[in-house]
Image 1 (cartoon, rainbow, N blue to C red):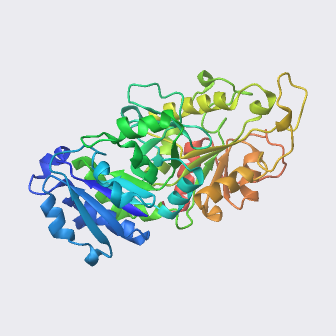
Image 2: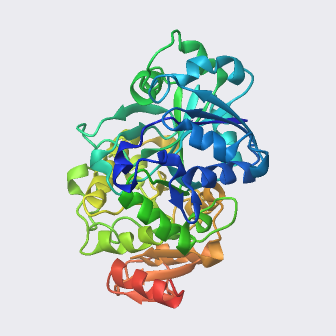
Image 3: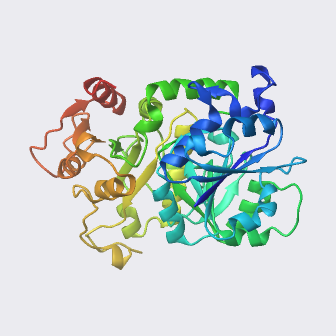
Length: 431
C-alpha cells in the first residue's frame, strides 16, 4: 500500500510560529512533524510515499530527498497552484491505479496499527474508509454518522444535530480504493470532505473504522504544544493497537447515568454527578473507555436498535458538553424471559454476552487488542463485578447496592461514585 501525504498548504494557522518553514517542517519533539509521520509509515511497512507539495515545497524536498535516508522511497507532486485537499489525486491516477492507498494530511501526530486498518477496509469493500475517533470538541467538528456495520450514513457539519450519532469524527487518515479515482473526472481544485467523501456516504460506499489509537492534528500552535506534551509522556505508543493495552469498562445505567428501569428514550438520559469528570480523567491519560451494558429493552420490543443508537447519541452529547467521551459501546440485546407485548422472539434466549457472562468484554478485547488482566470493570451491580471477574479483569463496584443476582461477589475496589472508583484505580496503578 502506498501513502499520499498532502503537504502543500500554506499553514496559515501556524503563522505566529514563523513563515520561513512550511507547516509540515515545524519541529515537534526535535524533528519535523512530517518526519514523525514518515517514521510511523515506515514502521508499519509503508515505504512508497508520495508527497504533494506546494508552498515552500523546496524546503520539504531538500530535507527528505528521495527518502532513502528515512527508509522510504519518496516521490513528489508539486502543485503549481493550490488544488485543495484532493485536487492532486486527479493527477496521481497513474501512480495509484494498482492498489489501495492511504491518504493523510501533513500535520498529524499519530501511532496507528495500519495493518488492522487496512484489513478492516478490505473486509468492508467500500471505496474509502475513514479512521474515526472521539473528539473533545465535537460541536465544532464534522461528525461521522455510521451504522453498526461501520457504513457511513452521513457526514454532519458542525451546525447539524449531534444527537443521532456517537462521538465520532474523521481523524484525518483514510484508506482509498483505486476505483475512487475513476470518479475524479477533471483537473482543478477539489475538497476531500465535501466533494469526494460526502457523496460516497450518500451511496453507501464509505466506511468508518473506529479506533482508540492516538491521532492528533498538530496544525495550530496550541495543538503543537499539546503534541509535544503527549509525545514526551509516551501517549502515542501507549495507545497503539499493535500491542496489548488496558482499558476501563463501564456499565451504563446507575454508573454513568441515573438508573431508570427499562430506559427507552433519549430524554431519560441524565448523567450522574461527576461522571463526565471521571471519564475525562481516563481520556486525558489515553486509556480506552468502553461501555458494556445489558439492553433487554431490545428483546422486549421497547426500543429498536436505531432507537438505542439515539439514546447513546444523547449520552455522547452530554459527555461531550463536559469534554469527555467513551470510545465504544458494546451491548447485549437479549433477554431470556418471554411474555412481553412486541417482543422479538429471536432475541429471547440465553447468551454469552448478557452480564454476568463476560461476552461483551471479550468482544471488546478482541476488537481492540486489550490486556484484560490490567483492565478494570466498573458497575453498580454484582452482575457487573462477576462479568469483570469472568473476563479476568480487576473490578470496582459503586455504592453499597445489593441489587445483584450473585451473592458473595466482592469487588477489588469500592466507592460511592464512578469518580471515586476511577480515582482509586488511577492511584493504585500509579497513573
